[in-house]
Length: 440
Ligand SMILES: [Mn+2]
Image (cartoon, rainbow, N blue to C red; front, side):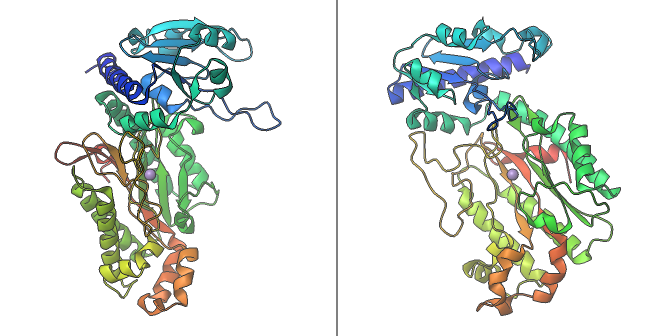
């Protein structure tokens, strides 16, 4: 199906959902702005701009200060901020999109050359909720800024992806897989973290800030820093943990691979094989009706078994979990929702009403506590790391004899392992978007 048709169906679903949100929360109109950029303190430089995700959910037009008005039963009004400017390039829509944008026919469009004109065109809609960071202007227009009720309702809607959104994420996966192949090849040829990052971005074909998130390119022991963002320049690392994804029309892919290189400790390479196997088993366990927490528990059982069979732990998985041993090696959650944000919203919502279902105390970093349902997209990314800070308390406590400390100390320089795929939940199971493009 072509993008125009996919998008018009996507928007129709959004508008129906917004109408329900308005009816449920007592508002008559929803106003979303793409937002204003963040300007660094005491500077005239701006951070790379990211649109309000709720805006992108309804309209893929890029750039700041656009405003969208949605009312039940009406065509949405898009007010495009299009200044005349000789400092920064400004282009007509057709030039920006290489022809008429596929989404344009779904909106009534007004273009405004000034911010004042944007907000004058919007006027003062009555009983209107506003979402975005231009709250001063929204307040002056009499809008209710960022009410929790409507935000939760819209967030809940974001957790069920339309065919248009799946298409965007498929395209982001194609690019992300291309980046991973290039990054892995660079690593195996001896490239540094900085060079591997450049190989990734080059293969995706974008600037750093147009990737889905800041790349994690970790050689050796840095694989144990979960969100390591450094880019060292030494070459010929022994292990690579590469966690990076691409972004297409606002939608992310989020892919991690761990690659043992030449000279890698064979015991670590064997752990990577074990993690690959259990990660694929976990992906195969995805099915509607299962709670994500149950899948997370299953991942701890499997990692506990791997740690035992590798001789790192001298306890079975049940005992290792009960004593908190597996969490020292695997401190994060199994996965998170994915979409317009890499860590997408609504992972802990109990429903559109905004009630929360927090993670259990023993798994504080679990980012989703939802029941698995069709059309969700989330990551499955078990990890196994040698993190000195988390292991230290066990070296002297009552569980110390359950660890092989000599082996652990020899594996600490290898860092850690994370393997991450993106799964679209179907009626009966899961579709692994990542493996379709990046089989290993
Ligand atoms: Mn992730």
